Image (cartoon, rainbow, N blue to C red; front, side, top):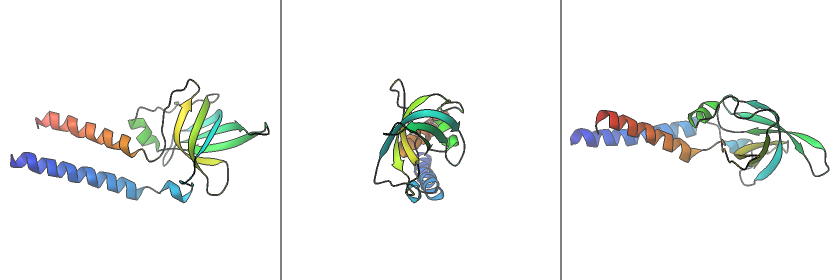
Length: 151
């Protein structure tokens, strides 16, 4: 019984440490993006970079005057996206996307994306700050470990 309680306390401490470390080690989107506002753009993918520290998707977006503007949307890190099932060619040139997120503080055509919706209406997420998704992955890993240990 003492071992189970000790393991439970250690698991909780480890989970807390992992979450707080990842949050403090990562720079905040608020440094580059206005988290008090939301923007939605619709455009055609010209390039998808599945990289760290943040995946990026580049889009051609038609503005209200009918002119094409170049936009960049920044999401979560590729390592985190990979854990959620994303692959390097998740988004391809020519894909039509709706991207929702925080606008750039500098006024440039950039945003920190919260969610991406494909042309067929499928929401694929992928934005930075996916804390609940990250916690779910950690809890699933802990559950598998506990099952292997017979706890």
